[in-house]
Image (spheres, rainbow, N blue to C red):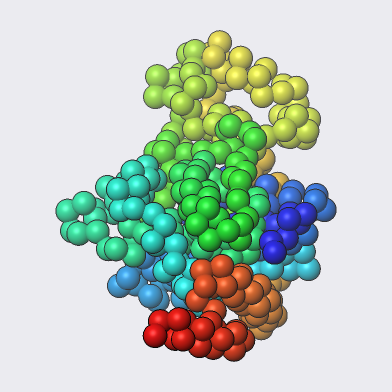
Length: 369
Ligand code: TRP
């Protein structure tokens, strides 16, 4: 029935903008590791344009344009189309059908309690303007995304844990009512705490385009430099170099926590052997923000340089990029249609799969007399 011995990954992103360093440490880096681990039978990455439309109903252009940005960012960080199936949500009608069925397995009260959706409703002003039903129910559509691929592992950011929780409840309920049909998914979040939640350069909780506090994977070295030297929040009490400084809540150190390794010290800042030593000096006083920022720029450039170069290469070959997405989406269509057929059969709504229902109807009609 389901692929019980298989390990399948499904994850995805909303195509609302270019991907940034927060995406990198929060998910992309882990995806590259998972891809190279050889532990998975299939890995699917879904560009969730339908989900993006749930809160961008009046901005279809933005979603359309960012499909190419997102796939380019994927390819640039080293996600390999030989190992990963990239697909576009709107081209997978099975997901829409599954969403409609799953909608009956969840109550509006349960949906109202989803903490991520609750926070997003506040952030987007839907509490005052009115809440689109599609946005309110997107966790159900996300359950369709996950189950349609029989995914048992869903690598996501921490903020997505409530979605996976809801998906699990829907799967359990479905299987209870209709028999073992769907695979129960598990969330996987990055191990390293500092990588789970990278703040914006201004110290605000999250990188967001509207706040202008992002460093994008495709930013030029000059932009990266201006974001760090011009905007990155340090310790406001650390006025003179000699003053003792705080490393907690200091964005430069939060980024170093997420990105730097001991090898970076050997290469760019041999005064210290590791981050703890550097932090210790900063706290004691005598280490200026300028040195710290310059080090961070070197660390980030080492990561960004090859990503940028890859992007330039792929940008010159957009036809191939399109074909990668097309081939992936076609494979995903096949896989998700098969799941839909299995689901419809379990729900006894598979009248046209064969002619067997005719016999049932005939029998019914004779006993009904
Ligand atoms: N909601 C996810 C996000 O905002 C994107 C997403 C859509 C997703 N469908 C998914 C993630 C399925 C994991 C699995 O990041």
